[in-house]
Length: 223
Image 1 (cartoon, rainbow, N blue to C red):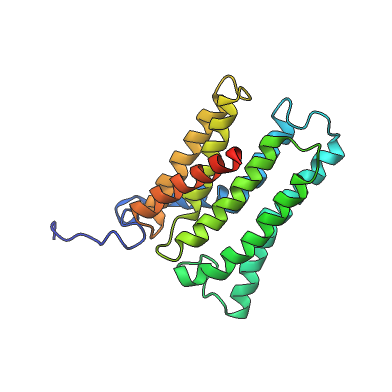
Image 2: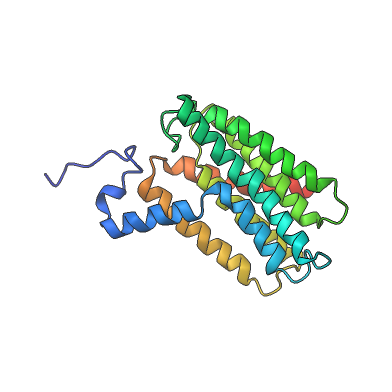
């Protein structure tokens, strides 16, 4: 019996060796830091914690910016998946197969492009916020393309984008203490570890997602 092992392809292989409380926390962090929520979290940070990003905006303007980003990058993609599930286009809202992810990715690409395009055309918007939205859009596009070959981790892609955004903030002296970068690394480590425990992604799919998200943010900043 000691020589019997459970294949790693089943839910990451690790969750069967982890206590129930660890699996619960892994699921919790996966939900709280779901990739479609990352743009909203970063926007909230820039609006209410960053000292200069939206300094000229009133409270009402900040609220509308946050709502616009949440509506386009979080609510609409999630609602689209819900409708697809009700209509039978996908068997589960968790999108467990590559085939089921094709249409939700395509829908998300439209929504993410739209929110970037809206703020790109507003001169008051900070450049690094526009770059972040563009990087998020490119991240969804890249994940869609990777989906042809393998089921890249969406969570890891979002975490890669988060880490690279705060790394660029630190390099550009927008975060001189580095505390937010350290926090981003911590979140990314926790979320990626959670995906190892409670998802069916391979190590390659998670690492590739992480580096894809980072690369897309870097490309968005260059261009």
